[in-house]
Length: 302
Ligand SMILES: C[S@@+](CC[C@H](N)C(=O)[O-])C[C@H]1O[C@@H](n2cnc3c(N)ncnc32)[C@H](O)[C@@H]1O
Image 1: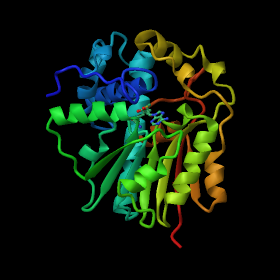
Image 2: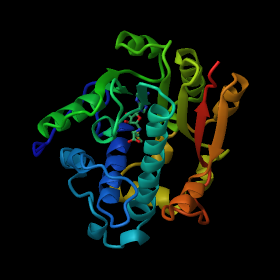
Image 3: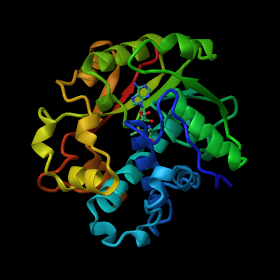
Image 4: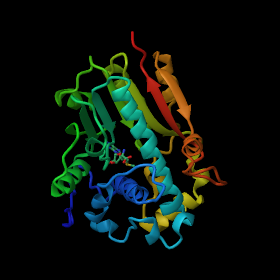
């Protein structure tokens, strides 16, 4: 068990800045895991939170939240992450089982434990790209649990604002073979130019039959939502100022760019999946989730 508190400062501390958002998602996954009507189970998630001293007072079960589901952070926002986890689990599993990809690339992997918890086919490799400090923290916690990945797992420390393609191919990724890429909860932390470059890089690295899913925020002015219950609660309760971490500049049209390069794309709202699964967040007024979209793209076979 990972009972010892772990600390990392080099290469992006998991407890500071944008690294801390990975702990927010992990705590949300822990809460989702133990709901009676859970959409996704991640038994590793709570161990990451427990290993981070800065999160000592964060809840790991909805029953520990005084206002329960009415809490904008640990109720609605955590439910959002639970739904997102399930939808993107399904995307990756269908890309490998039906689509035939055997390379999975998690961009901004954070504390995603999919390599350990999903049913991967024989011969599958999961590449995890994030800052060095975040990956080191994750490694120590999982090593402390004696957890065994269910696919070959290759951590690739990288700054995704820069040139990361060389690190990925040096780690064994083969651009000539089909792959499934995921950028979950990542792109809005990157400058617009870095998002454009990242999408171009994925396009260059992918063979026909590959797939990509990513999350974007389409609000023209994020500050219009600064009084939204979700942003206010996240800042007040756990000190994460999401609006301060997001790159608040005009976003590129990444779905459009992929379509122009011949990819088939579909742009969905999270609320569509809430309706499909029968649980998850629904629209509300002054809603920080209003502009969130989940984009699914496939590169047709030649
Ligand atoms: C909100 S977390 C999401 C983590 C994971 N995808 C999930 O959904 O559980 C955002 C992640 O992006 C990573 N990240 C943000 N900017 C990055 C950058 N420039 N280079 C590498 N990783 C970055 C952070 O370290 C963090 O782990």
